[in-house]
Amino acid sequence: MRSQIYRFNDYSRAGIPVLPVQKGMRVTKIHMVLYTIAFIIAALSLTVMGLTGYVYFGTAAVLGLIWLWQCLKGFKCKNDAVWARKVFIFSLVVITGICVTMAIDVV
Image (cartoon, rainbow, N blue to C red; front, top):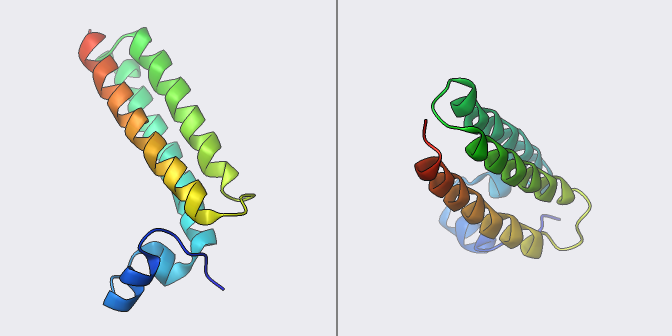
């Protein structure tokens, strides 16, 4: 049985090929972890390339690792809908935090 996440049934009925509908939640969670790791590497590379300072690097690292930890918690969660919503909301915090810090700590 596939877990029910926000708008899962709507996507399914409409034939919209989102990953949870097509491949299931386990595959979706694996992709989320991999994409989050890629995001962290890309975000931190801005400091490595000399475009941002160490305040940005620290902020991106901390927020990225918390986001990754939240994604990993999905493999043990009992309610995918609640977990997915928390991860989504935190992703907005990550993007906002990184963008604000990037604007402040530019080299």
